[in-house]
Image 1 (cartoon, helix red, strand yellow):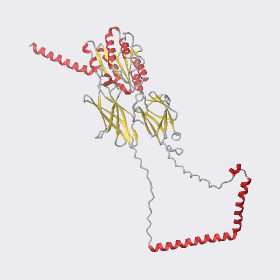
Image 2 (image 1 turned 180 degrees about the horizontal axis):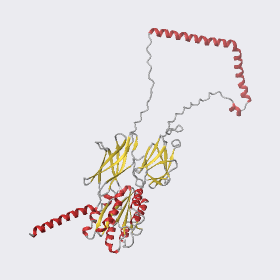
Image 3 (image 1 turned 120 degrees about the vertical axis):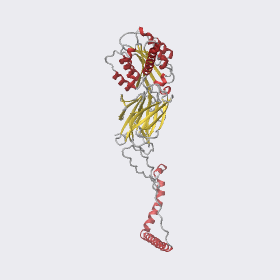
Image 4 (image 1 turned 90 degrees about the vertical axis):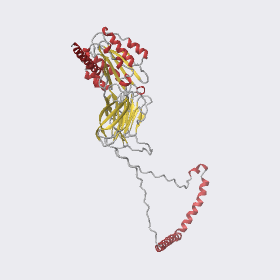
Length: 532
């Protein structure tokens, strides 16, 4: 009779173990979501283009991306370009919580995790490391070698005292904002303990969003009762689009998930996943939802939606019409009419000749003597003048030359209203609406030759700036012919757009404004006949 009881207990125990296992596995990492950040649609000629940055909040290896307008059956013509940290640049800061001596083993695990993640130091990748307790302490700078970076991490010692978590995170975010790179990330390794009184969650999230920093959280706690603190810390990752996972959630090897989470692909599959998608917008103008689907290497998919305002499609400019004079068809005259017209013209010619002959005879009769005397005097006067005047006066003798006729001056063509003239001083140069003048380096001047100019590091931009701090598609400068004003718009750049020391998403430009795109400083200049 005891076997059924023992069997029931065994079944219950196994069931509880299975539930606990799957519950723990689900708690190790947050759900993976697809995030999209799009700039306003741009328009060149009749093509409307949307550029968006896509990335996942967890491990993901992107293979392709599709885009579709809600309600449409066909996909948009979209091109996906994966993020390339080696070329575009990324800066990752690691923030390690200082622990007391009793937890020295956990502190060593956190340092080892940073060493494994930061092992790939190729291309434009940069790494920095800090510890925090009652303040932020720099451990290793991105400029040091890999060996020096590892030595400084291993040398982190235990300490006791208050833990000002949110103040340290906010200070680390401020330091990251000054770094270069298209991606900026902060990886926090802590248990969630915080003794802050002033710095709060909301202030840290606001600072991270303004600086374009994504926060990732790796939880290390030795007591399961501390999980609530980790959950509070994980909200920083959730609210900034980052990844959160419990690496160590109690004592013992069974609660250590370092091998599953801290792998060699942590950097590429979590911190640097995703990329840029460029889609050609079709359909009528208006506010529409765009659905993105990312196809991953494991054949799974992630989806996200974004709402955009599609501008009206620009009408094709009509080809200039060349008006030619239509030939006038004159009916062939009949033989009789030709004879009559010929006879009429002959009588007119005879009358004209007779009139001229009469006038000639009359002139000779009345003025012939006077004309003869004038000609004779002129012939005799020239030799006398030549004899009396020396060689030096020869240049002053008037010559009877026909003055050259000046070419007729063409009438100026009227300029179009609300737009700069396409010609200046007769020189056929392309229209220039304004300029972006470099304030550093070679002091280059970049002309704004259209009403929608894209600026970025990629070669397909209207203005290409070769600097690691510039995003592939960084900003757009647009001219409104109706208001005669310029506007600069951030296209989702990692380092953003700063106008006159103020970071902005979109702002009107005035002549002389200073524009900062990453490390590149420019001065905006409007053509005098463009901006009033």
